[in-house]
Image (cartoon, rainbow, N blue to C red):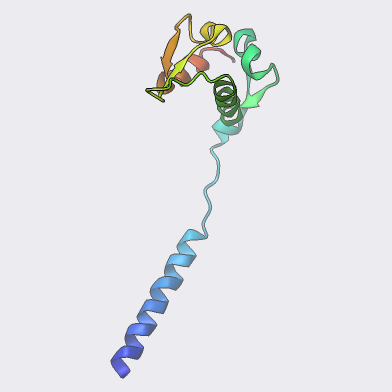
Length: 109
């Protein structure tokens, strides 16, 4: 019986330690939270107000999903309409990972 009690106590201690570790919360990176100013081409898609990079990316994805611009077969590709072609340097199809580098070129520093 004593062995069962020790095993039960060890299990409770392990659960308590895991709960303490999960309590720590991540802090957002200050560089991502600094507002950036979009230029006129990007402003046509997300608006001209200065936004943090995180919000800027969210607004671009809202625009893409609202206008059904994500490729049906390969969901990583984005089919650009006229507004996004201006942002994507005239490309009609862009990979979502390539999109961030193209968008960064349209931020006023």
